[in-house]
Amino acid sequence: MIISARARLAGVMGWPVDHSLSPRLHGYWLEANGIDGAYLPLAVAPEHFAQALRVLALLGFRGVNITVPHKEAALDVVDVAVPLARRIGAVNTITVRSDGTLEGTNTDAYGFTEHLKATVPDWQASGGPAVIIGAGGAARAISVALVDAGVAEIRIVNRTLARAEALATAVGEPVRVVAWTSRANAVGDAALVVNTTTLGMTGQPALDLEAASINDDAVVCDIVYAPLQTPLLRAAAGRGLRTVGGLGMLIHQARPGFEAWFGVAPEITDDLRAFLAADL
Ligand code: ATR
Image (cartoon, rainbow, N blue to C red; front, top):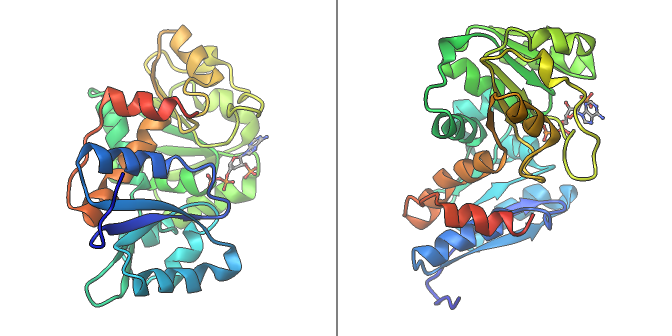
């Protein structure tokens, strides 16, 4: 890849950032579309985050993605945060506007919904309750996505009850809290089950949830993408349930930023998925 002096610049800011798939993802799209641009990994410590974000605008960057642990802090640093980002309580995509100010948005909810609809086109929000396992940032984005999709009941199940309660309070109706010990019961009549915890990730224990306890009609999603097929997804697929893996959410959430910074709506292809999976 050779860039000119007019190359468009973007990147991902995190701490650490070396685990991020985003540079490969955006790099693939830049190459596939023959765009004169670059997308860089930007390792920025929390104490330098606000300053680094300001400097990016001065350096002529078009924008950045924000990842762990800066997503919540970014909400306070940007000049304007769209209402969706405020509801989610986090910013993952920043655009530098023509006057140099920073606009923050959050594409995680969009990424989740788009990937779900692309993978299970006949999934309907009206189909029944959704159960979200976990209460971190990803759970909050997904609960907002499901509220906006029109799901009538969203159950949050989290090891630490207080975090689940905080999420339910922040997002509001129709989110409610179910005790961690009642999780098998909670998925019995669910139309959608989503794991947002780190359980099932390479090197982590599996989520302790019997696939047999999940409703026969449920769609089971995992936001973990390493491995591509988590123990939860394997067990659900083994029971004949429809499953949705985590890599697609990552790919879909990246599209709006790429389009804003580089001017092209990028495509999601099997070749792209294979390219990313090769690095997991
Ligand atoms: P993110 O912002 O990416 O969602 P996070 O805020 O670190 O990440 O949240 C991780 C989630 O995984 C939390 O819901 C966490 O539960 P706690 O709130 O009880 O910490 C959950 N999690 C992590 N390890 C877990 C474990 N061993 N058992 C149960 N839940 C776990």
